[in-house]
Length: 423
Image (cartoon, rainbow, N blue to C red; front, top):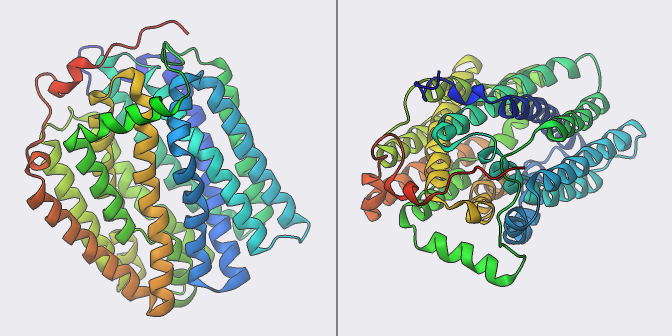
């Protein structure tokens, strides 16, 4: 296994296996909350704009706190930081469950809790991403990152589909409660893992530390263009929070159909993730990422005006597969090109792009849907996504030419130090 880095070699490491298990449970639970929250708000408001506000409430705290959160991930113990954020996220889900059970849930209260969870996520994501790098040696890192994405996608396949089935027999309160419990499963896993390094030496929380991360990103045009394109693509084509409208009014498939639609992108993502984790790392990364984004936009555009439920599921699956190929390429490039002492700050800057795009995109989609129609909003966003990819390919030739060198690491990765400090 050690001689075949493309064949799940990262699973040799017990701490990484434990982390993946906790991550799977936590992510599957989060899908219960995402499903319950979108359906809950739709029932309370019947407004596409209200669904779009979920994205805004999630991402505004992330944008405001991301830079400081990245510095914290580099300056403090990453495992302890993630333990704190997981507890906070679990408590917000428990609060949603209590409000729903007691009959006190309102759109304002639920959105306020979403904002609190967004603030915790701002610190959780950089800590989580940098912690993964500390659980496997560098030679297994591309495979570990691919498997981390695959685990994330497997959870997002199972979570929404199971949530849709359970809601027919239980309640929204139950779904929120399951999510709360899932975060504490991740806490248990974190208490047992022993990362090789939990923070970067010599990094202190300061404005200078934050500026250093931004300066490094500015000097990496390939990474910068990858992140900008990801933001634009998901901003225009991100409209998953409008799926309750399709389930209720367009395709008329109810909550069970909504669960299948929310799971469909992740089915495609899971298949793509398995393929990426099994095969050697993609070498022509820039060209593959650009092509994947074109396919993603095309699938979303076709889904927006599709009147047939089975074909809609297939198009959503294609969009998820293409999005995953783009995501894995970007994640591997960023981690191999970033020095360990800057990983937290780079993760936080990336978070602004990869969370800001889809979450603000949900708000944009909700506004456009409110002013025009839901199909026009979704299909038009897919077309805009394709145009962004074509424009980037023409304007940034370095991205088109970007590829892995040698044995699977870009030339810039030679500067990345091995993560071998004791926990």
